[in-house]
Length: 104
Image (cartoon, rainbow, N blue to C red; front, side, top):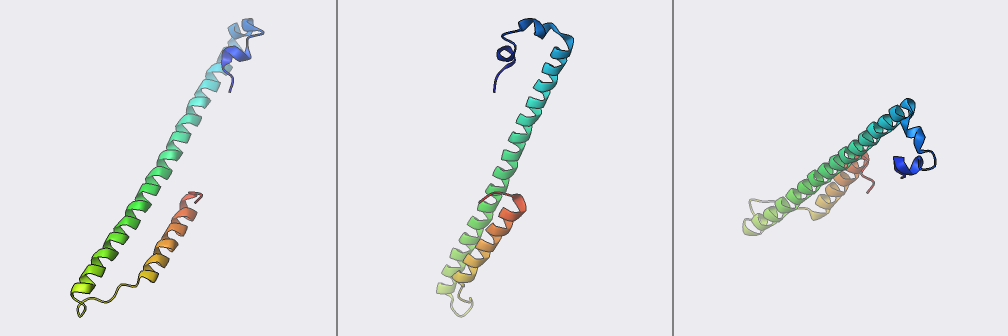
């Protein structure tokens, strides 16, 4: 992207024009808004991905804990079905991807 001085290097006297100065100020405001929006979008997606990873990690930890308890006390705990766990995690990731446009 060219800066203002580069744009007016052939006609620097145009920079003194009131309308050109207003246009420059307006352009700078728009650039600031675009930058803020990009930062905001990145933060939202980063926050969403961190939340998803946290949920997935929690599910994996819970699976491991249940597996240990099932081995210790087979009469009290049902065997944990790893296939359904994986299916549920995949469904969760796919639905969060669709809801939040994460482009995974």
